[in-house]
Length: 576
Image (cartoon, rainbow, N blue to C red):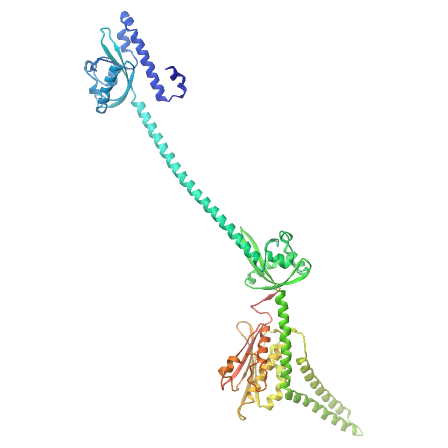
């Protein structure tokens, strides 16, 4: 008991109640030991009745010998009915066997034994008691069993409620733990997925960086202020800078000085106006290398948002090699065109001689008239002046023809300018007037008025027109003598804003075999032709971003037509 007192601070409420009952039992034993003294004094019955808990005394057979009023009230019975009887009628059927074993054990054990029982009152209610029993020896040397009953119904109910509450809490805790376990598992799964996604993103970023750095095109990313955010390795190779010298600095650093001066206004204009129009187009620009030299570039610009911020990526390609190749090809094409112009002049020699001969003959005639006027005694100076003026005009006409021929055949550099295609056709046709008369060719013009200008090398496109007309004349002159010979030149504007020039004749046309090979170099339908005219004409047209085609039916005639972009094409490469 002293050990229990040492640990009293750690005891539960039920343990403290049991300890209190044990104290009361010990107290009662002490009181019984003084029973004889109390008997002498005549106080025994008073003590028994006033004992604060239910108390019964049983004989060896379990019959009730004495019972105090508190026990009578607890059992809900009449005191006279219970005296001399057993408690079996008050014991709940489920506890009768344990009660009998308890009495047997109590009779054989001198120590205090406790047992919890369910009891029935006469009114039918069931209640729980905690029974503490011990044995004692009466004056006549008979053994009696003393039972102390403590109603623990409310305590059991409280403990049951507490147990139910604890169970509910345990269920909640278990459910919460299960939920937390599931949440933790889901969280771990999410973390694993995020880690996997992060790993995938890192791998994808590494692959993308590898691809970007392996690209031959430079990629420059800038923000809305024009500050460079990132570049790839190709940018370093194109401009000669390392990444640290560009990232965080203005994109002005890569622009020529002239462009750099107007960058601020240009960038704002680009953001407001140019981006919607420039998607999918290539701009030809110049960049500034670190060493100060300029590099020709093809530039494509795209816009993309990232974390709510707009960025612009410029993809640049160094086209220095392409520009050199294009220049070489143009020079080579011009050399070939010069050769074909010489050949074309040879084919038109008789017509040219006739064109030059006419003004020269007129000059001779006019000078002879002047000489006759001068032989008179009183020459008419007014008439002489008029005749000399006409002779001068014919001489200028002959000089203009020779000048045009010289300009047409001499080696030259490519020079493009804005030209009215109809005026160019009229100028080119003039040289064929003698051929039209000689071969009885009826010439017809169907030129659309007010066409947009074209930006071309005038001599090269004139050569294309002359070559197509020369071919039509050669086809028409082989027709039977009395056959009508018609040649027409037409111009129009296509739906794609391209100028279309058509040269149409009613000659013998081309066979299927000839149609397959007519644009092939060195193929010709002429007895003395080189087979280079149409091939070079097509190359000249394509060099101007146009195309050359034909339609032909045997014995029905042939139409050759070519297209040229207008001065401001709707599609194609844009120069900055």
